[in-house]
Length: 189
Image 1 (cartoon, rainbow, N blue to C red):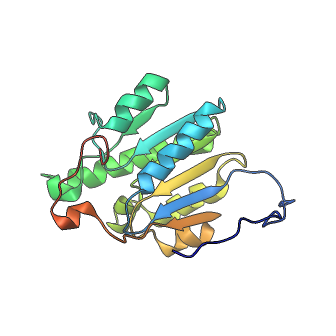
Image 2 (tube, rainbow, N blue to C red; image 1 turned 180 degrees about the vertical axis):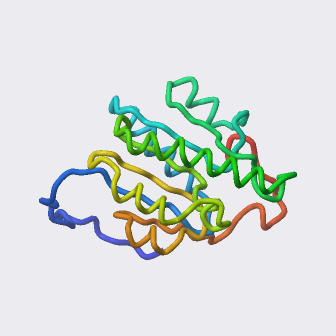
């Protein structure tokens, strides 16, 4: 490890642009995309801002750790899907659920009543061709000016990355799963 001296001057100038809703993308093959989005939701909720989380691939009955906690503190989180494709018994049904779920999420985004809308795992129905990319782009472009949207998932379409204000690519350096350690409750669910 190389030691560094702490900065003694502010390392950046304060931006002077307008405050407005930003489009945030968490993508890449590393872990932490959803977790980072949930952290944003907690931060906004802590400031008294209305938040809505949609999980495009999770089933409505999902009871992962985030669902339990968000229910306790009053952040609405909704599974809109049929689970991941390798678990699905009917991919046509999965595609239909994704389209129906997108219409619900789109309506919430365009209504402008939420400070932050999280579209967790939205990249998968996009890259599978289940959602119309142009419709998603148009919705993101025309959303009310003060609505923040955070999208998560691997292989985010380049058109969304181009449109986004902030993009973070999570890179896997090392993962316990690759060493044969199964997912741990409370860490990965």
